[in-house]
Length: 141
Image (cartoon, rainbow, N blue to C red; front, top):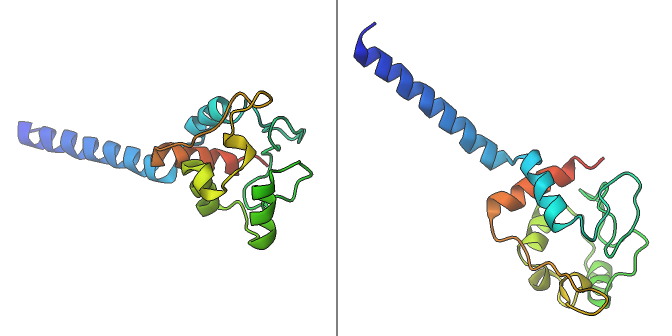
């Protein structure tokens, strides 16, 4: 085989490999999402089939679940929004929440630093990380 042919095959292989990585990032990676969920959500939310509430409501089967339907003491702002404008936790709403929960639902408990709630969630700025997290949340069934 000629050197030019070998180099061409190597280049094609590299392009296919890089395209595969790009597609994975576009589609999201549930394994990365699981790590993000454990680090960002697991402190306050149960993500198992036990469906136990912690500081926040459980996240099991959250994908496409109507917001605010689980028996949990949601903040007045959250209750008001979900009563006046019901929505599902679909990709768009989860993404909006994960970008900036305060902008999406003002005065929600999750972002307030208090004695009873010393941790808060300020959002995930990386679109790729949000996608990975959402892909993982879809697996919680």
